[in-house]
Length: 435
Image (cartoon, rainbow, N blue to C red; front, side, top):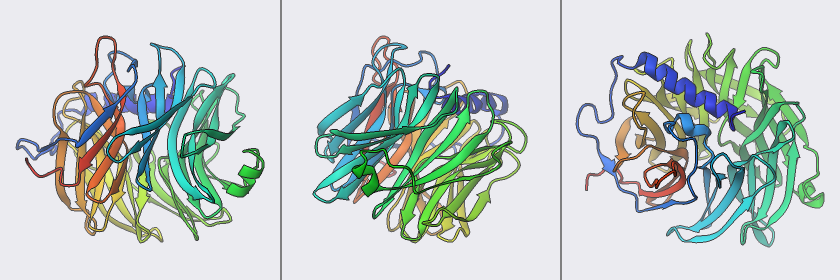
């Protein structure tokens, strides 16, 4: 069984449809001119880099060596992901802490069995210390169980671990964590390896009860939506919470990964008691999906991909929403092959999206950054990471001051059998200005 079944299917679908549809007219990066490139302020890549040799970065998106999330808190960067120490060996969860100059402060690995993954991390100020919450999954017997950990952000010490998920041969995975006061929300999905239904799920925990019981506390509530018996409905990427509830994105209405009526990108809001207040969809008659979101408290921006709009097999999409779900401007971006976006962040003037782009279905992938006008989502700037390599540094993006920080994977530093490595970049927000 492949490590990350849904991520493998995601990458394979990108590759297959890109190959089938390549050659359709589309707008390539740079609109026919030489594309701008950006040079990171610094690059941090680590690990032995063993992965699945021969797979392009989008297919190797299931890969065992990837930084899946970066979170910025109080002048420090927290990174979590997956690391495979040996070729086809155990996959371990890692957590790292850096300062904003790229100095590694500490690193921790967690090996509970053959497969352990960290997909999201959130730092939060508790009385007397800063705590770090990490979500993902762990392999136990014949199932992958949802995994939630709390660590001391000062040194990475593990304080408690909580797991759940009882579907035999099933997969349970946390993709989003949001905290408001003592409320800790997690978004995840439950699925079966047999390719049956996928359920979109949000759970709310009381942080105080989790601490009192060392992670054993049950959720205050669990909310599931979509058609439990016939659909593949997901929660994906970051979520956002305030005193009025929690917002979640993903894909709803999918009958199969690439089937007819492939599902829509959605945004939904749940109130603090778990009631679903509304759900808004965006897309068309093909495959559309929200992969992450960000909010400035006045609106939300969802990043993902679309096969219903644009020019290629898949194009990157950024869609603006009001806090009440009102759909605002959109930006669809890409060329004739395949493109998608996961990392998204906003400041006072702009929205920034990290995108994976391929000019040809069999060629290497590139990491692009898009700068969009915050009010209209008009494209202000775009650039590719300079140099050569197969890169997918798009899984997470945060911003502060004049800088962006991106997490993902790259093979440009490979040596011998080494393929992809986890990577963290620091990039100027003026990345689109030619040097």
